[in-house]
Image (tube, rainbow over all chains, first blue to last red; front, side, top):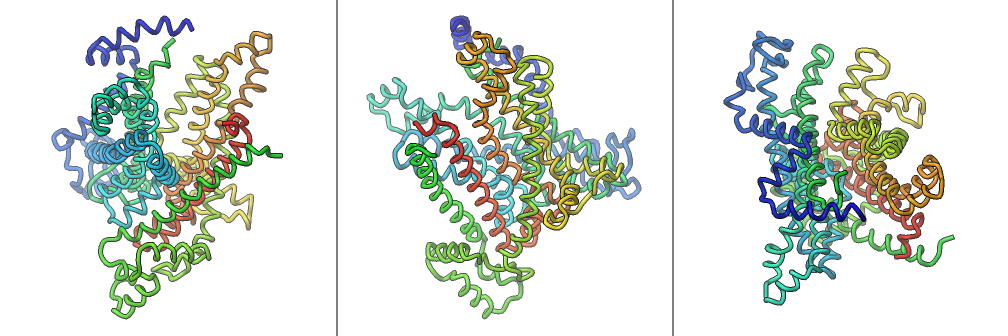
Length: 296
Length: 319
């Protein structure tokens, strides 16, 4: 194939370059991903610095200014208790970032080791773990999260740990599939001959080579986790009042949809843009890291 | 009709599903074991007498070994006994029998919409890969996947039900009593659910079609002078039709999950509202029953898709 001969030296070039150069190449090659990454940085910035940049206390009620439209004092208006919507939106970013990181963190800590072990051990261990993975993939994600949250106690942390448990099989399946391929590699045999333990081989030789597709999937899962957090908070099972979250802001705005329909647009757009940004970065990473998808 | 290879394949699929069903039901059974503290006291409700707590313990066999308890629970479940609601006292199976068809009606409606709209969009995008239509479809599907479906549901309600009054804002009509009315009431929820479904179908169909159209086999078809239209419709679609099965079985899982939230927006008496209300009111037998019904639905759909898959695609049963 002509593509392969053109691709090969380019790939070699990229492999020699350092991380920073490759990172810069990735972003200049894909400006949309660069914008998406900038949006994510901004949202993480909002999440971290929320107490300093938000103009008002997000839980401060003001009964003289209820359900107001946008104005100079309140950029996005006020909600039914006179709280500043813009400040609540900024503080809602903290909830979203915390929730997504927690869920994906739990999923990685559970899923990646299990997938590595299943793929490397093979035999009945693999068969058993694969059936467990199949089982948990059959649970509609939110439904299991709702049930586990209900049992463990309602709250954002419990809700997102349950979401993480539901996501773990997806990462496990990916890690397992990569491990199955990688354990055939010569360098794994070599390490084995030198007397390296399975744990060492998995951690030092297989994990670093298996991590790329897993990282892509983790980025995409951030978006799913964000939507799950919004849904659970919307249902009243996630973030508890008076603390703001985008999902619960929408739920509250819906009660007043007939009087002030504009209230529900801002948090919805925030969710949409953040999820879109995670997906864009994930898809772009997938293309940049996948040597078989040569760019035209 | 089926050759021995296919029959063996079907048997293997069914055998593989058995441990999944056992583990899924065991996980659902274990849900109640996660409850902090004494389950009997929780199940007996507040201010229960100690006799009542003892009675609950007897009924649920909480003093016996775990596996025996599971066996008893599963045996009761097979016979249609999932215990009673803690609040209303109604049998859980009765509740589920009432709300489950409503949810399935909306889910099926949404999946039909997803396919009817998603397939042409995917075909359009793949036939002009890299062109303007392709980019628009891909952009639309990126947005569709990232949309919170309950938010879309609300916007639909505000714009089409409150402002224009084209559709009812909330409520549900049973499809058995009034089929047309049911479709009428279910349209907005189904559209809200289909937003991500359409995106998913279009995206998956496009990527598998593009892959097929770039293969050597299709280069040959093109080279021997077949018009692109014939190649796409006759050969391309046949090659990816099996992939559609996978997408649909995935959609059932996703849509069932999404319907939980959308049902709350529209106040539809379905599985979603049941499970959310039961969770908020700590009515655990109902939560357990609803999760069980949903996971068994997904497993069944996956099994059927897998079986169809191995029958439809000769390459798979020959492996």
